[in-house]
Structures are given as C-alpha cells and as structure tokens.
Length: 354
Ligand SMILES: NC(=O)C1=CN([C@@H]2O[C@H](COP(=O)(O)OP(=O)(O)OC[C@H]3O[C@@H](n4cnc5c(N)ncnc54)[C@H](O)[C@@H]3O)[C@@H](O)[C@H]2O)C=CC1
Ligand SMILES: CC(C)CC(=O)C(=O)O
Ligand SMILES: [Mg+2]
Image (cartoon, rainbow, N blue to C red; front, top):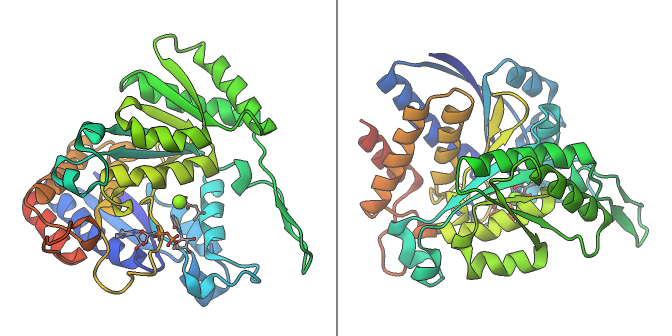
C-alpha cells in the first residue's frame, strides 16, 4: 500500500516520541511491503515561534493532502503566559475542528506486566478494558468565552446541540455492539442545561440499540466509580471537557498517562492520531518519555485510517512483549526496577518486530 502520513511533532516530549514512532512506522513499511511517506509540519508552540500562528495554513494544507495525521503534543511553559492571546493549544483545537474530528476514541486497558505498578488492588483492575468516546469539537472548549481585559470577570460557555450529541452517541453505541454491549453516558444533568439535553438525546439514540445496556453517571460520581469498579465499564461517552479529565484519571489504571493512545475521527476514514498526554515539560529533553501512547496511536492509525489490522496488531503485540520482558521507562517503573530510555524501549519494540 502507498500512504502519506502528515506528522506534527509539536513541543516538549512531542518530537522525542514522534521520532521514535517513525522508526517503527518505517520498520512496519519494510516488513509488510508498504510505501509510507511522511510529511512533517509545524503546530503549537514551535509554530508560534516560527510563524506567529499555532496552526499555520501550510500545516493545514499538508494535512489535507495526507491520508491521516499523526500528532504528538503541544504546549509548554514558554507559551503559557496568561496575558497572551496566542497559545499552542489553540492550534490543536483548530485542527480538530477544521477536519471535523468530533469523536475522540481513547482506549484504556490494564497490562498484567504492570499490575504491581498500579496503585489499586490487583483484583479491582484485572481485565479492565474501557473505551472512552469523548466529544471533541464542541462543548465548553469551543463555546463563547471572554476575558474582559483587567476586569475581575471572565466566562466560558458550554453549549451542545442535539445533532452533536446524536452523532457521538451513535459512535458510542456502535462501538459497544462490537465489544461488551454497554454504554455509560457521563454528564452533569442535575445542574447544567446542556447536560440535560445531552442525557435526553442519549436516551433517544439508545432506542435504536436495544441490545446495548445504557447507564447514566454524573461526572463527579463517575470519577469515584472509575477507581472502585473499573472493570464494570465498557464504553464511556462524555463531553469534551469531562472526557478529557476522566481519561487522564483512567490512565492510572493502565500504569501511566504515557501509555494511552487516541484516535480523533470524523465522518470518513480520515483521522488524527494523538497520544492522550501533553508535552510533559517536566521530563522533556531527558530521554524519559514513555513512547507507548504514541506508538499505540500509530497502531490505531494503521487500523482505522489505513485498514491495516495485522500491522496494528504487530505493534500492540510487540509492546506487550517488551513490557513482559521487563523494560520500563521511569513512569512505569516500580521502586527498585531498572529503567530504560525512550530510545531503548523502542529499540526493543523494533527487535520484536524484526
Ligand atoms: N494533546 C496535547 O497536545 C495536550 C497538550 N497539553 C499541554 O501540555 C503541557 C503540559 O501539560 P501537563 O498538565 O503537564 O500534562 P502532561 O500530560 O504533559 O503531563 C502530566 C504528567 O504526566 C507525565 N507524562 C505525560 N506524558 C508522559 C509520557 N509520555 N511519559 C512519561 N510521563 C509522561 C508528565 O511528565 C507529567 O508529570 C501544557 O501546555 C498543556 O496545555 C496537555 C494535554 C494534552
Ligand atoms: C490541550 C487541550 C486542548 C486538550 C487536552 O488536554 C486533550 O485533548 O487531551
Ligand atoms: Mg487532556
């Protein structure tokens, strides 16, 4: 197969995990006889530094010409001045919106090899396998907001329309049908009008999926249920902000925030694939970044956008095997365990793929 992948390394650990992931892409291309072309573009803080714009037009054009986008992470203290109107994260929000990527799929599972590293009882986390379906182009991250100069007031707006909730709910229910037939819809319907519309809409969509059990949880209680009964969840659907927060919380079940991948999808097969973590400025430039979230995002790209299931599985299996062999970046190493660098971990993945 011939395919073009637009790569957006971004900031902080972004370029570190991207460069390692492209080694794996290249190995997969050689092993299975695919002709992958990658085109690198600017986004986030580095794009602000070089062009003044967190999402330059050139980047959008390059991504439009690709079959899929692989993005690492944006942001960092250098661009976090609260008085600045231009921020790296705006580039990320804009690219998701530009390509209509309304559904962010964030799988979370536990790894037997890392069970002792997870700060929860082993019987609680056994077999955890959750798919978050997070709304990605609406809600409070995209509603009207205003910072009124030096005024003591500012506001954000959480707005959802019925069609926005409907299309996400269909993604969630269809995903559940291919899994364990359960959807948990998370909202704050006891307080927020937008979340009452959310709940009503989900209930209506559920009528089309009689084989799927529907559970509703208020977001505050959901944070607790995620830690006390994680294996009871199958698909969790949530709005943009709640899904963002809950999936970072759930990363503890996998062993680290550095473990989680995601796929940001729209109507067709085109998608943007991005680890759940941010630019991790506290460890940037030290070879400490866990590359698994980024590698698994590549696997999702191969599976969803290029329909290369065997190749995706090969990456996932290689990661499982390397973890079973005991390799650990610092974030997943328990006390006394030896640690490896980002590059050493990926060297081991490549050896498994060879
Ligand atoms: N998708 C994106 O590009 C995202 C960007 N951000 C941005 O990233 C910057 C830093 O945000 P934080 O709140 O610190 O969140 P973060 O996700 O970058 O880091 C949180 C903690 O997790 C650790 N961590 C994250 N990824 C890791 C990895 N691959 N390996 C090992 N440890 C890892 C970090 O070292 C840190 O201690 C901010 O500017 C934020 O806006 C945050 C989340 C998502
Ligand atoms: C950086 C933000 C725009 C969003 C975020 O934290 C995420 O998508 O995980
Ligand atoms: Mg986040």
